[in-house]
Length: 190
Image (tube, rainbow, N blue to C red):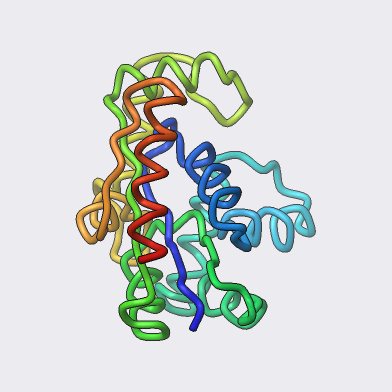
């Protein structure tokens, strides 16, 4: 049976680096929920694609079709012949619960976290249009990302992180993170 690894975590925590390491070490298939929204919906509507727009549309879709709508769509397209599938962008508990129902103990939710200051430095260095330009903007974006004052169909990253089977604290360099990922890979293959 396929093992599904869901990735959740706050922006700037290093989810993409964790995804890259896991994908390589596990020879896994990879999909991100935000790419589904970005590629299939927002671009077709001609809407600027930033973090806020992705959050807004994800919330709109979950409100209209249920908290697990994004993963339901993705599930139908996932290759069932791979040993490992990585699903990045779990941002609502309904998405994690969907996979728990589908594959049971073969679903592992991995939270990636890092201290605020480190995440702010990373996003400032990255400097993409979706990244915050100031500490105040960072805090405001983080509040929404975590789920503060969000409806149940909204972004609920904090709740997802609390549900995680494994939490990786990414507060060191890539070599330190690689060691943590290697340990995770051993447990996933056991």
